[in-house]
Image 1 (tube, rainbow over the protein chains, first blue to last red):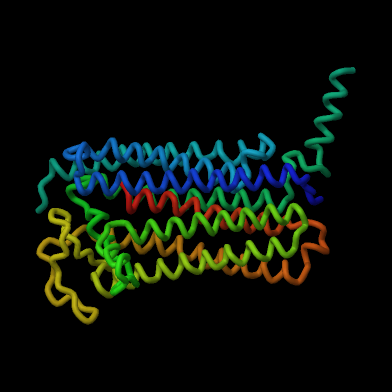
Image 2 (cartoon, one colour; image 1 turned 90 degrees about the horizontal axis):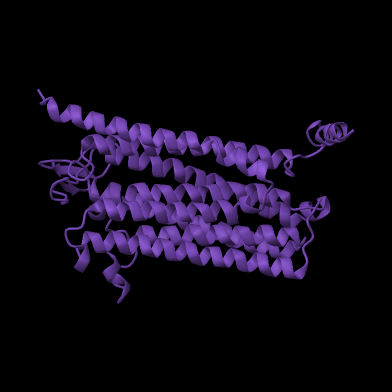
Length: 117
Length: 253
């Protein structure tokens, strides 16, 4: 039942994890740096729209999620059928995000055209 | 002839009595529970984003850089003092603590594959310490926000326009109300979501401690595999994954 590893497998697994950790740390530092540079309007970030920064942050977070799910939770190495049963349903979550962002902007539009009593 | 061979193989694989996805029942069920939990957290974060969009993403909402400036515990310490007042510094520390704690648990799982009882116990112990450290930080942050800033589930003293807290808060009471308080949903959803996540962290720590005790007792060594460590590890990584998105939505965006 136990997968007994050879020494090479063990070493490569260990280094894969530490490599993923390094990437996660770098991504986090970049996210924070972007947030602070934009907040303090430093140099080229002066007057920059938050949307570009936000998009970069979302991409970096998705990268982090990819490594956490793929490496730490081992999904990259699992049987493809198992990985799909976990990842494909998340399409509904993406759908939810998009639909509710649309809904939210509709609420904003309604708030704008109807003055408060 | 060829067809029946394929049919026999399919029956062997999917006909019962084997593991088509090469995972035990317990591991599969943990995965599907985590999937359901992902939808729950997703719903909460979507709620936050929708309300924030409806209020005017930046203009009508509290700026996280203004609300989350405190860094508890560094008063009087020479260089670290400046961290207090640096936006997002404390929450960055929390993120690193949780990421490292997750890595420690991965190492425990890897040692489990080698049936190394001492290794599993060592790394699980470090993972538990990381979890406790994260929860302590979360508690300190909540304390600062509730007691010092006056943020609650029904009152948000952070004025969206200026980012300043123009309410006066003393001895646990609002002495002077904010002239233009921020949207209530900010404080409400902040405590709801970080609280729900914190509860997951707490339960994760408890599970990890139980598994550590079982490891030290030799239960898994006798059983011949450390799969329980792997299953509980999945839960712990999920907690880390959720934090990545809570951190993104609340503090960064």
